[in-house]
Image 1 (cartoon, rainbow, N blue to C red):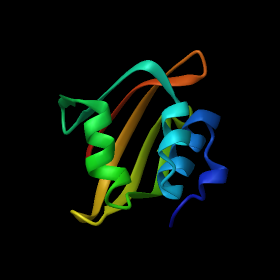
Image 2: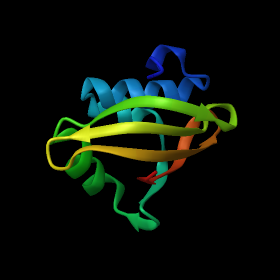
Image 3: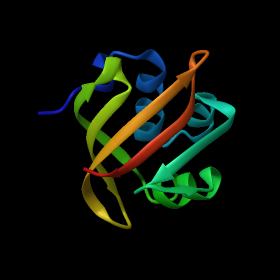
Length: 107
């Protein structure tokens, strides 16, 4: 069962997922603080390179299966043209209404 992005609890996480699914890089970046960081499977990555490689050039999509921690933790089926579908965990740190860090990896 998936949770529609419009039903996600936290508005900035909702905007993040909506931007990913729309392939809207500008809207995605607007959800982040200017100094946002991220990690994938426990390793810090260059955010701009990662989002282009894993989301925006390969039609990344998040189908959220569950949320917890007030909407700051998600489990989603993440699909892109490189890897196909993977069950992934996402954790968001929200600072002043924007995402300052997100961590993702296989769930």
